[in-house]
Amino acid sequence: MKIISTKHAPAAVGPYSQGVMAGDTLYVSGQIPYVPETMKPAGDDIQSQTKQSLMNVLAIVKEAGLKKENIIKCGVFLKDLSMFKDMNAVYAEFFGDHKPARFAVEVRRLPLDVLIEIDAIVVKE
Image (cartoon, rainbow, N blue to C red):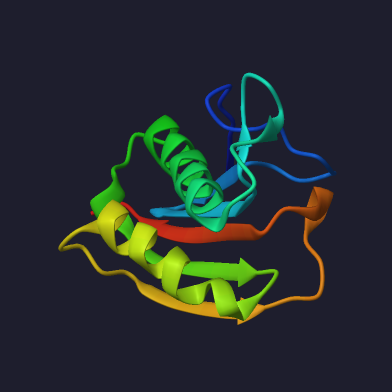
């Protein structure tokens, strides 16, 4: 098991790693929409928070020497499922033709009261 850590994603806010590589699989911990340099949310709306969460995931993926196309599954945790359409539009633009498996659920509360958190499973080819 290899711990993956980068300054290009927010530092962990608890006793966990940004990512863990086990064999050919990278497990990316849930990424909230904090800008790494400021440790503040990217914005107040779901669009900017979705984009930042995805960019944080991608920073960890790249630190492991992988790329966006290696992402095989994402989990999306939303504070309010009525934001799904706006989140989905940003998500679709980010991934383009690459379409990992995914789930999206509404949760009562997220760390630091953000609107979204996204995790990922990534496989080295």
